Each structure stands twice: as C-alpha cells, then as structure tokens.
View 1 (cartoon, rainbow, N blue to C red):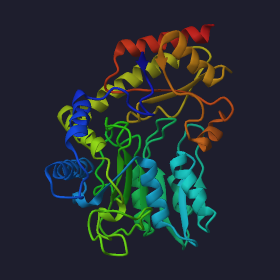
View 2: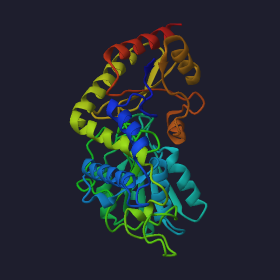
View 3: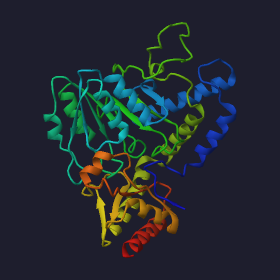
View 4: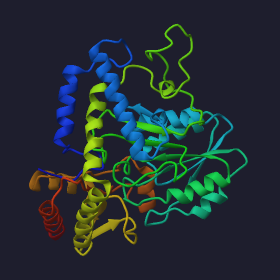
Length: 378
C-alpha cells in the first residue's frame, strides 16, 4: 500500500519508536507512584521526553511542557482553562474542529467568539485580526498550518498583534510540530498545542502543550498526581497541574525515541524531502484536466499537503477508487475543517487530501499522479 494520509497520522514510524514502545511495555511502571525500579524507569523516560520536547520547541524549561493524549485534549485544556463568560476570543475559518467545537461550547457559556474570514485560497487578513480586537478580548486561538489546504500562518505576525493588544496567543501546531522550526520564545507564543502521532512520528495517544511560565490555565481534569496526596485540591505546580492521572508512559517512551530520530535526521532535511515530494505531486496533478487543487501555492514553505477534486466526482468515491484499485491511501470528506470547506465551496463534495511523509518515495508520488490522471480521464 502507498500511504499518503500522513496529515491524519503517520503510519510508518522509525524502527526506534517501535522498539522503544515494546521495551517500555515490559519495563515501565506508573510514573510518580512509588520508588521502585520500574516506576523510576517511567519517571526518567517521561522527564527525558519532556526535556527533549522543550528543546525542540525552544521552551525555557521542561516544566513548561505538559503531556496529554493528543492536541485535541491540549486545545480543550487551553481554551476551557483560559476563557470565562464575558471574555472575547478571536479565531479563524481555517480551524479544525479541535478548536471550533470547544469554542462553540464556550460560546454557549457566555464567551464571545469572532471568526475571521478566509479568501478562496485559504488565507486570512492580519488587518482583519487587529480590527477585531475589543476591550474584553482575551486570546487569539489559531492554527499554524491548515490540515486541509496546507497553508502556513505567519505566527510571528499574529504574535505581534497579540502582544500589541496585550492578549494571549494559543497556537494549534498539530500539522507543524516536527515539520517546521518552532521557537516559542522567539515567536512569542503563550500556549502551543501539539500531537505526537503526526510529524513528530510518535505513537497515537501522545501529545501535549507548551505553557509559558506565568500563564495560568485552570485544569480540565483533577485527581491523582503522585504528589500532595493529602491535599483536597489538585497540585498547582506545573506541569503536574495539568497532568491528572496516569501518564501514557509506553507511548511517551516511543515519542522519546521519535524526538531522537528527528534530531538525528534534522528537521531541515525532513522538511526538504517532504516538500520535494509535495511539489512534485502538485506540479503534475495541477495540469491534469478536470483536477482542481485547493490552497495557496505561491509561498515555498507550506505543509506537505495537497487537497484536490476531480470534476464533480464525490471525494469519497475518488478516495475509494484510489484505495481499492490502486492501493493508495488518502483522506476524503470534510477533514474536520467545516468552515474551510464552506470557504472553498466544497461542503457537499469534500476534497481528496494527499499528505506526504519522510518515508514516502518519488516512485510512490509518480504512482499517485498516474492514478489521479487515469481517474480523471475515465
């Protein structure tokens, strides 16, 4: 099978990741719940992962890294832990439902939500963002890279607006952590949410968030933490304040190994290869009659994603043909980005998304182009 659905989850992992999870299943206990060897193994492994994640993101301290099961959980913690009734928040039509649905929920609780428009290529206006500010604006919540179009948002520019208006910046880096260079200090990000199973090449069920020291986030969950057992309240110190319950020690051992792989291979090298594959595919399919490609390809840096449709064919039908007749895995439908589909006028048709990984090959891309061309001709 040719796997081109890496924006959903990377299927092929470094062998070190698989080995690390396997070893952890036999040697990792419950971190913070005792002082015997296997518990200490878990605590050490999790701290190593926390330290490496802090280094990757440019955080000041490992204590600024909180681990969750994915970016959806991280975004829920950030949104529900920051916003209160009477607050105003700004977001965009680029967003994934992991941002939109928590915001809609908070809107029902008295939070005012402004949705910035996007143009037909999937770009937002930073001038519109600044004009949307109000006296009660608390935060901007925005994606770093669209999971549908692959467009990358200028987070530095957004941060300048946020700091000028003295509000918080919450970034969804689901598609960009492990792909783009991110320095949360240089970019002036207050909270950044990431997932481990995409470009970070880790196992599913791993993810987390960077929370700048001094930013107060109320916990989504409270309960066991392994410390301060006799206190009625959940610990307030970070990162334990946002990590209630048993950690995914096995998964985080895999993420630990994945971070080693990323450092060894180098993000620049990984990004270069993935973009070469993406551009090769894009340049060939855009010339095929009946094929319509979505997004803005005027900038050299973007996520390694190409979303398209073939004439009036249902995206589900095209994706099924690719899977059954050509053994090519893609993603069809709405991609959990309903507002972007409204902008692109693809709400009914959806779109077929091809997303590329460091482990894909030129031969696989050529095969995918050939399949798209044949479907379009038929």
